[in-house]
Image 1 (cartoon, rainbow, N blue to C red):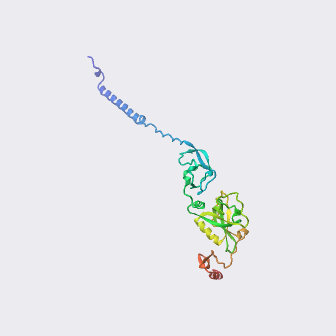
Image 2 (cartoon, rainbow, N blue to C red):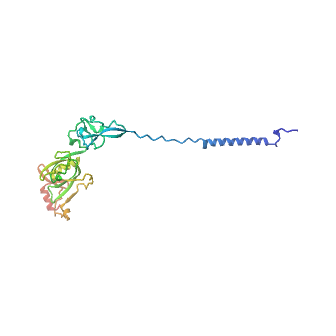
Image 3 (cartoon, helix red, strand yellow):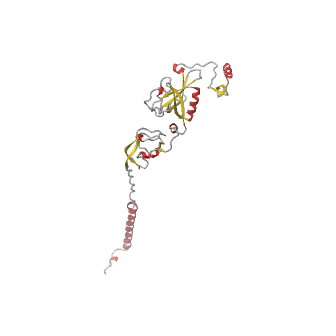
Length: 299
């Protein structure tokens, strides 16, 4: 009797083969799923946007000042020359001919050799050149000087000075620095600062106007009535400041210690009220008679 192929194996051989085929198929499916999960489904690498291209420079004939121009100065064609410059970022704000400046004034400081911008110009004339140079919070104060106190006249517009005071009423000579690094706005009503100006003659007198803070302006006005003032010329780049209100006495120059006067009254100054003079002692007004009694009692 001839057996069919299905009956050639032993008993149970058919189901085992089916199970093997099922397991093999399951393994293949898991392999495919794993490939897509861990190998084949990675997103492509993110590409960074290309860097922006630099702005193209535009070559223009522009106006540049021959010398620096201060605030408030009326503009004149002779103050400028034309130069070819590469302008980056657009030319709408750059002045290319004097017709754009005609009748205008400097609204801010304009550096020599730099292209002039429309923002630097105003059609509103300043009340005067000095007032146009006073920023918010500052004041212009005028002092009377002579050839000595004005450093032979070298104290000119644009210079920087310290102001020193010697009290007119004092038991011993002292000198106090009351203002530091003040800018000179004008000297003898000249705002040019001409370096070729002749020095002041001995004995001559004039005035200088300083730019100082509001507090220093009050200090200077009071100092004028309380002693003699002199100016010390500073270097162009010197910004080092000494201790505020630094005072030296003759003893420090001679190298000796000041001697205390027995029963002396520690007066802080004198003031005049209603035509009468009073001493300021410990923040209180004391008459001359009261001061004399305090001196006798040693208080």
